[in-house]
Image 1 (spheres, rainbow, N blue to C red):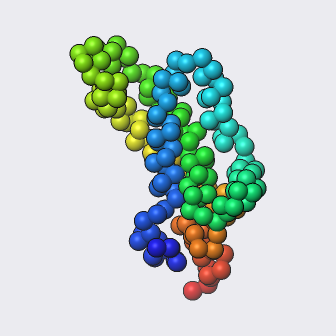
Image 2: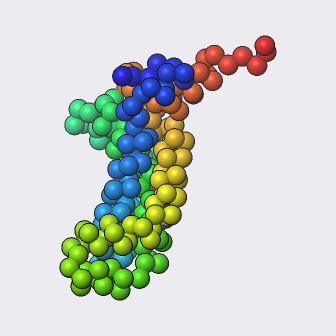
Length: 178
């Protein structure tokens, strides 16, 4: 179902900002061991944080060129990847800060009692960092919601997000006089 106007946006279940936020949380949270303790972590961290430095116009144009060469321009996948790229630095920073406060000995104790690495992460680490996960999800959503330029570059005529719909409404229908 595609969003036609502002009032009908709430019925649109495939909002790229929501999927982009979820994907950014998965990617930003998935490689915690690489992010915190692996060699080359500074390179990976700097690579993940580059969307903070690069202007949205450059990101949008680069993604437009890339996706047009592989023939995916105007699809939902392009919007989801773009929103993930824009939101990922905030998730990496916030979740990374939360993970650095976790005492690894607690997770090691759970592993010594027979828990797998995944079980120890889910039952021990996730409850400790739930505040940073919530903050990261909030920042990722707000950043993705605010990113109009990249969305204008990549959205086709059928894929309309709420920021594009609001922009179109303000541009064409807003009358300052009652």
